[in-house]
Length: 120
Image: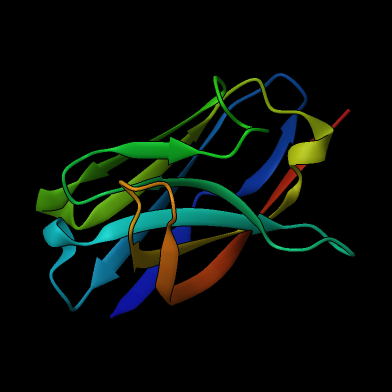
């Protein structure tokens, strides 16, 4: 499985960005997909995941602002990020994994990250 993330960039606080992650190989529609982020000096933080059946789980810091979705026809998972804050600045990485629906998402394969920078 290979994962290619895109959509990062520089945005002002309060703005929006949409990240995309395209998967090749594997059975995309059956797999859970997720996003994590890591800022310099911080541990990697869970952002969101979506199961093969469409169940979504979010990290507490992004609930109500971020939305994860998937398009199985395009083998793509999206992360719509609204009301961005400077503390959302990080490298965002997508993954495929298991146990999203149970709230214990476990990544298996990772893609490269995409940088999101939110200016104040």
